[in-house]
Length: 226
Image 1 (cartoon, one colour):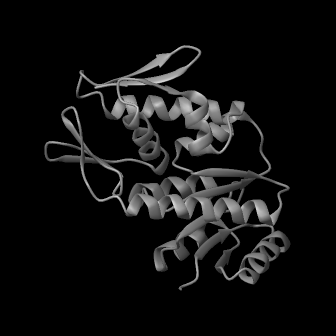
Image 2 (spheres, rainbow, N blue to C red):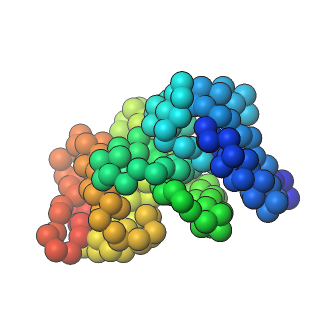
């Protein structure tokens, strides 16, 4: 079995080397970059299985790097490492297509569990191959695409996961806590704010079919009407 290829971008050299050595001791293959520009070049040279990005880096910060990657790659999981705790930073990161946040200081076991969880979810999606009819749209969970006629628009990993859960409960209420625990891993305040951002994004991407609505059922959750 081939090793999991991790692209790690961390400008604190000592911390970066600790993370690299810890992951490699558990049979990961790690490419360590000390700034965002080098990480971008490394990503283009050899696409990794997952990216672990520090937010604050010289030359190109983690947010800018994630935005560049998501323009061409909606699938590869991205985990941010950050010491920031402000709600707006968390929401911004998820809005750019990040899959997860790990706040410093953190345990290596936590990071490894999160890496494996996101790769497991990606493999599950890749095993799903069929288009799903959604009103005038077609939805492809594996390729993370919405299609309307000949026009295709990509979905981020979280947008795709969110739409799948809503579809499983189409025309019925989906509990907020269920969504948060399944996709974000917990139902804390920061994750709830992030989920609301993704609900808004999905509504915009589905707006060309007025028969499809994502309703907010106050105090309970969301209802996909189609």
